[in-house]
Image 1 (cartoon, helix red, strand yellow):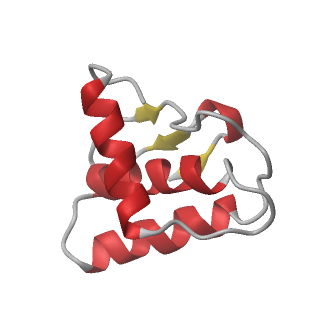
Image 2: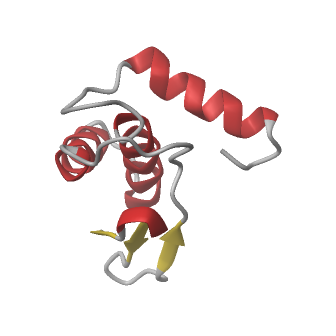
Length: 94
């Protein structure tokens, strides 16, 4: 998993197909902590049994949320759920 800043993230799972996850950020105010958010979210997802693709999708949404806040910020569970709900309501676009 490689973060690509404004371009989202790249995933190349062992034995799998490479995939780019476009950014989920709506607005960017501060990128402080975005990488930490990706690591924390992805590792939590993987430890909970998620696939690498699911972990990358969750981490991408979480990072998109924290860069929309000023300063080092956190992503709350309700915000993460809301991000997926907005994406679904927008027809797959976040």
